[in-house]
Length: 193
Image (tube, rainbow, N blue to C red; front, side, top):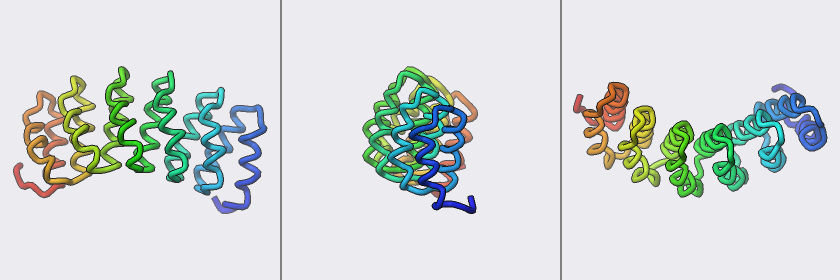
């Protein structure tokens, strides 16, 4: 966005005062593209917006901006009633990559909604090696796409301590998990394929 930082105060005023959900949604999207951290407190306030699409867009914007001051509010959003809010919060936390979210993302691994679980696995992978025990545990989940996400996350972390779990994942009943394990092992540098 060419105008950039000069319009941030006006967009923040829209977030605070405009009653039209579409207008607020557009303001959130523009703030996301600008990426100015001055908007973070107001984007955090919008997480409680009555319009779910505005709240989801605010979570995505906070993830894109990547400012640590958003982490506590995104952690609270992991406990939202709506599963689409919980999985978007996990995605945003993964993009920010702050390790203070690890305990809450590990808790989200127990979410009854598989897509929240998957988003938490991916977020933990983005955060790094602190999450390895939880990711190793996720390799035993009943849903193949969660096991696949855990394998991919372990590959992203790139720690050789994951190799035994990844070799076990080569024997998974699901082909996608096996393929992901092969790619993760190659990425880590193990020529076992």
